[in-house]
Length: 293
Image (cartoon, rainbow, N blue to C red):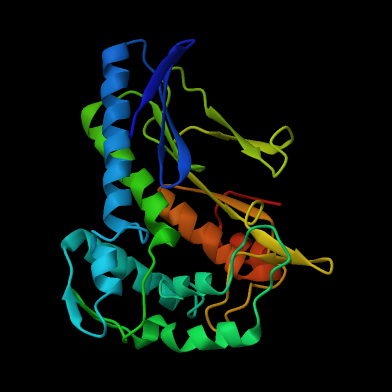
């Protein structure tokens, strides 16, 4: 059963819950329990709503309907259409490297820190059903090639963070930090003008790799610290090239980007990873604050 926990720590209230297979927290700069409780409940409810609607693990939502369409035209609602439009933009911006149809590669790759590298034939079997350029998208109508799937996991959590932040701003002028599994937004500046301190944790939780301080805006992190394979001394990152079906070569372990919205930050951190060894060069060209490891 879904639940929310709330406790006071110094002058803030901390709410925690689980969503999108991640620990989530909401820190509210207020002494008023009722205000904090309302804010945390709104954030949790919105995170759960988006998870329910867009998770590829469910069989009762729009993603399931799309993925089971078997080559037929599906008409989607306005919210889904906005995410598909954004997916199309990312595909174009990344020269096809960001592709929401590439999620089917999970059938070949399981990034469980083992040495189980798939055979080439397993990957070759999936490549014909990958490629956003094969999709007919004429808002609000979508038609996939039979056997194709979409997976919005690459943008869903960041979208949820921004939606939650928007709802909080509409109900309160408190400074609220929303953290959904490491993707973060801050709704407003703190009353005393100080910044929120965010630790970036490495694969060793006791050894943070840096501290980021934000007054407002959002932060997203992409990386392979927990999702990778390793064989014969070579590490295989979970970020896959949809053209080859193989992991991107030599990406950083983690990339964090600060931006006005979480979906912008997430887009840039993911696109940076897709550049492989050229990730930092890409980030410098974007002229955004970033942290790379």
